[in-house]
Image (cartoon, rainbow, N blue to C red; front, side, top):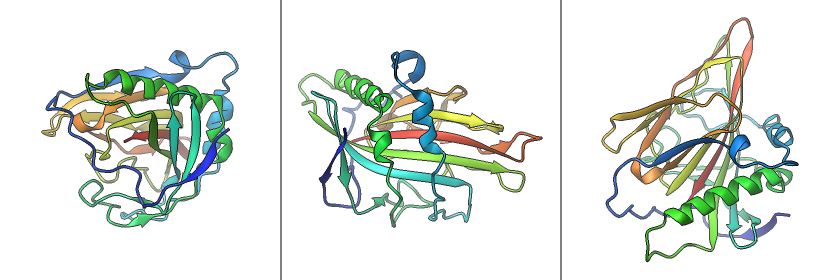
Length: 247
């Protein structure tokens, strides 16, 4: 069961270290349900935590299409312990997020019950291990990882398209990120594009199936996602995403 701890400050991640001059874009694609989960892991239970996300009140474009929750956790690789980290809000610089950066944003935290799911435990164990395996020889591997967790629902209606990345082409300002589809219903669009550090597009890919993910070294690339629009005749559609940001 997740426990709580106190960590001062308004943002989890300090400025990430350089990636030792290795500028080649580093990413992998996969599906968490197919590759990571075992019998007894309840994806449907996990996905239901996206049904009650509150409206994001900080949208600099005035949009009402994004619902979200946010938490900071620590993860101990040796025993799989997940601890909620008390925080004073979520802060990104204007350099990282030109639309919504520069202010402390305070969101409702992720439900404790989600942090206790075996699905999250499998996901964390897998990606923390992969980060450790990719650490260059001679560099220490952190025994405890601090991780930003973001739950997003982008809603599209007949009157308003949803914009998954209203800040445009960007990086998150961390070391590694996981962008995982939880669900998509009655929408078109939502196409992900990865760019090298010069801004040239390298990959275009649509996360279509629940569990589809992009695992990315954020220091080697930028990314964006195209707007989502409702697919007629449905009056409304949505795209549910789970983001993990590793310092």
